[in-house]
Length: 114
Length: 113
Image (cartoon, rainbow over all chains, first blue to last red; front, side, top):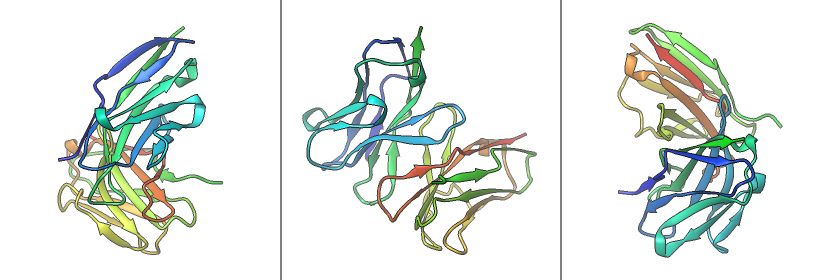
């Protein structure tokens, strides 16, 4: 069965430091890949997506992610985090037998130290 | 433009009661999705509408859960005989068609006492 793993439940980063959030998936073909962010009281917001083409994807708010087929990974990165980046981040994969269902990771909570 | 809206934002009910949760999608979006999110988890798919019809309701946990979208716009998720295990945040999303990029509402936090 398809699955998405976000191995880090919490990550604490100092403001201004770089960030990498990990996402691994199991899938039999090239998946559709997404990163969403969820702030308290807010809906899930799409940061970026990968469907095909260039494996380095740029998103909103200065985030980027790289699709690595050999590692079945789609890690999210940001060179310098801001206090406003504190939120929960979810990786999701489009199901191979459906063009609409997403399989979600359990999320990584990002904590920013001042 | 207006995003996806959900009402109420919070709902507290007693075990055994009936609740309705409303979702107003982005205008023109034909696809609508309901998810449930428990604490510390990612969203769990419940049901997907394309237009007025439920194209996939395989995620509904049991027959106490039902959803409608009679005019292809607003949707209502209905839960009968609520149980404490139904407590969660219920998320609604919409997309222009059955594209994978989904736009989410802020959710309704349901608490069953």
